[in-house]
Length: 394
Image (cartoon, rainbow, N blue to C red):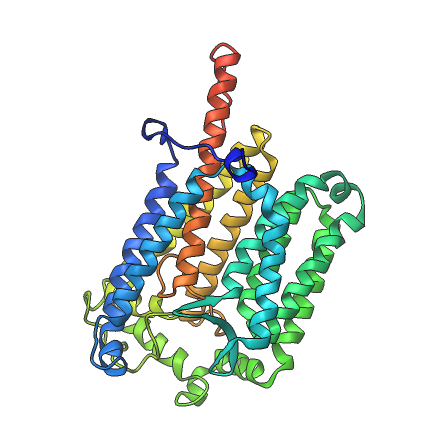
């Protein structure tokens, strides 16, 4: 039997006992994404895609079909599969970053995309998944070293530093920030000492701050973030239009499809700033709903991770923690950028924004979270049966 086949555990229909809250939140966000991508892209598509108003909608639906298919495959794989192939995934992710840096497609001064025939690959999205999977395995293999020696804490930082360096060459500061924050959270939850965590977090914050002001365009973004109205037709234009959308939305919004900002005022509103269109059309209620859904994903991911720890599935637990932090942190940054709470960064809103790479990778991550929960429930049931009905609570 092959290595991959040996790590597969097919799920029968009568065994599909997943976390209903997590699954419901993800599917609701995907549904919201389909609606908002449709609403925000129709006018832009008609103007820029030779009159084809449904260009981006059709592509989003194709991406969604691929994403759900990939998620179903991931749902069938035992978490030991990801543990075994974590180092290879990391190498593949780093190789992709190098290739993108050398021959990637440049758009608006950023070289982040690799063209493979009709398919466009964004290496930074794949790298988020790869580094979390690798680090979860490292935390299991080097658990004692991490908790007792400083070198156990520093070793993964070398790899993280390499990845951040490659991402900054694209440049993709937003992806680098998400990866660093997520990895630090995973190291802390795995048992790194508090003083190491605080010292390193302070150092990383300082370094990232210096990087943010080192490049003129990043420094200009910071200035525009502080007062976007000072240059509302220049560097602050996108944020000003997004703030106008939020302001128009008020409590209950202008109504689905009635956004004015998407009519060529807010550039490419179906991608990174889809939240602004949602806020304008659905108001505070719509924004609050999205926030609640991501809060549910974070809380359930943390509970799934804790249950896996109780079942001594350490790799699965760290994987769940990593995915939970990644998805919720990226969502917070995206919404913070759209609402003017954070400087502008090119990050998608998971499950909602238009973008095939993000949609596929995040759906696979959600499927793995469900798989971790399933395996923990199965082991919990087996232990309860062995102990004569004793129940281990999560």
